[in-house]
Image 1 (tube, one colour):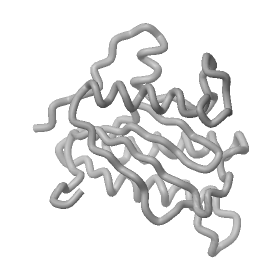
Image 2 (image 1 turned 120 degrees about the vertical axis):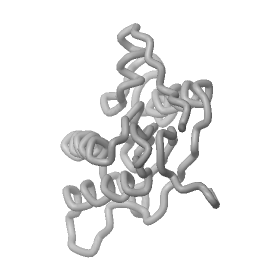
Image 3 (image 1 turned 90 degrees about the vertical axis):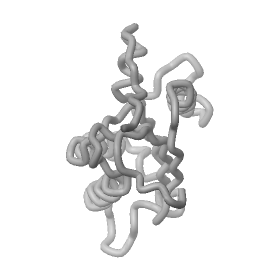
Image 4 (image 1 turned 180 degrees about the horizontal axis):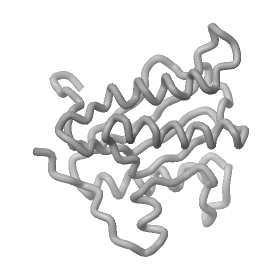
Length: 158
């Protein structure tokens, strides 16, 4: 988004796609590594993973900066580097497409809409039945909702 610096306590819906839409994450070990490295990158970049879903050829994320200096671009770069290094099978074969789709979320209603989309995505893709939770879907917001807790995700950026 022109003029927006992607720093601070904003929430973002991201979609990252594997290079050539290859099914990098259909094997359980690769999907689990993706989830583990996602949490590692988020902790390093002071971001909260509110929701995620690892699909065979792409990843949906809802992340939010936890500090004024949280930087979405740094988070995405680190996450792609960590997963790229871990999952690369040949020296010159990239794991991820160069770019990614991002959307800044401005209120709780948008966050709820994105969480619902992320949770339903596996069923839409035919990976699970509509009533089942996809094995590689989670995040602090998703876990709170599934456990019956209330979770206020949206923090008004200062």
